[in-house]
Amino acid sequence: MRNTLAFLGAAALTLAGVGWYLGWYDVLVKPSAEGHQRVDIDVNIPKIKDDINKGEEKGKKKLQEALDNHNRKASGVDDGSSEAR
Image (cartoon, rainbow, N blue to C red):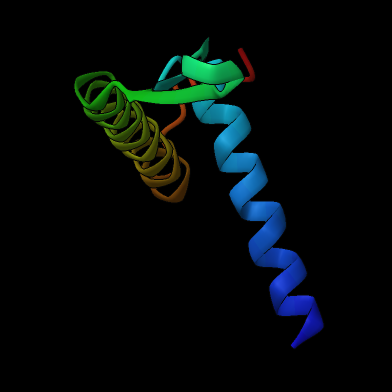
C-alpha cells in the first residue's frame, strides 16, 4: 500500500513539473485584502490538447516507421534506410 501511494505521489509531482515546464498552467500569487495572499491557477486547456495531439501524431509516425523497418528486414529487403540516425 505504501509503495502504491509513493508511486502515485511521484507521478503527480512529475505531471505537475512537466505541466508547468510546458506552460499548461500558471500559478499566480497576489496580495489580497488585510495581508492575505491570493493564489490563482490558470489552466491553458487548448495548449494541453495541442501538445497531446502533437505527441499522438509523433507516436503514430514513429510506430509506422518501426513497423515498416521490421517488415523490410523480415522480407529480406533492406535499402539501408533503417540505419541509426
